[in-house]
Amino acid sequence: MKSNLSPGINHFHINDRENLVCLLVDLQDGLIAAMQQDVRNKTEANINLIITSAKIMHIPIIITEQYPKGLGYTVKPVRENLGELYEPIEKVYFSCWEQPAFQEKVKLLTPKSVIITGIEAHICVLQTALDLLSHGYNVRVVSDAICSRYKSDWTAAVRLMEQAGAVITTTETLIFQLLKRAGTQEFKLISPLFKER
Image (cartoon, rainbow, N blue to C red; front, side):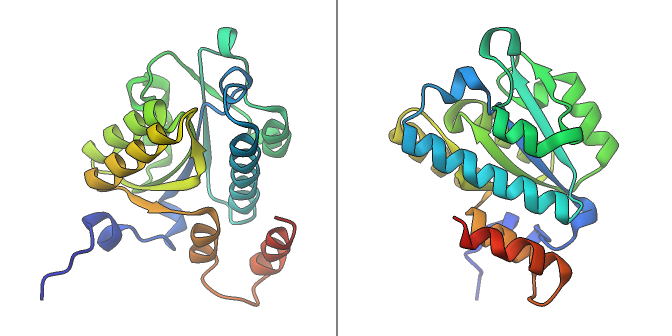
């Protein structure tokens, strides 16, 4: 019987952390200000939760900022959470992949799989996901940690990325897949964060 699962699901080894990076795309003051307040709050909170979990699990994080001189920097709560990890790659292309510094960072970290969060879903997130997929990376898009100004754009972007081979997931699903089991030190540190959601 032929499987209906996409190649991404078959080949994305979510527990292979040595081959995994987390990407935060353009969560900047000038962009997030255009989002609806409830969408903004949810997206920021979920991204912060993913960042905290990634730090605990020692998963590398790449941060990009689209033309920060005009659009500002990564939002303060996330920037503070990143701490010393806040080393953003400045870009002008919508796709992170088109920025040479991004490619250099990815090649340095040598991941097989990329977790994508950030904004906007239908522009920079979408184009980045498609480029990463076309270059052979497994892509997992966290649907409740990306957003657009209009839900119709977000919906279309998620559909397009899934059709292209990305795995669509949620913050809680992703983190518990990474944790894999209860009772570990990582679980004890991360699980209380969900009680605060």
